[in-house]
Image (tube, rainbow, N blue to C red; front, side):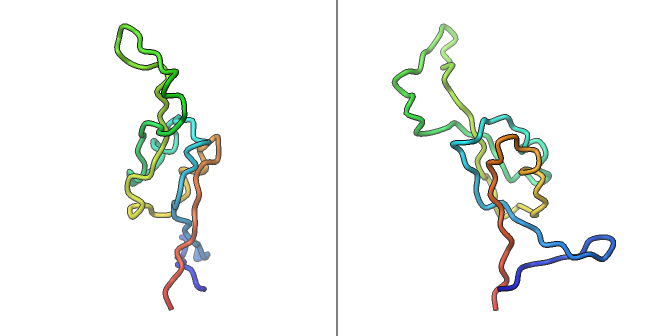
Length: 103
């Protein structure tokens, strides 16, 4: 099947790979991908279902030290396929795919 392609400044062919998923079990919540994304596609959210809920300890400030944040896709439709997020990710959590054109 054919994929969406574009042209670079020098006339070369370029196929954008759009963000389709984030492996949240590998994500460390560093925020590098969030900072580099030009379109606000990502958001930092609390990790859910870690299994550590019984072990959380609350100190005097009322905040749990075991709260873990991970990246999530906020608006996949805003992704321009630049791939900047995956280039800066130290854990290689991002999954991209080219957009297939309808026949």
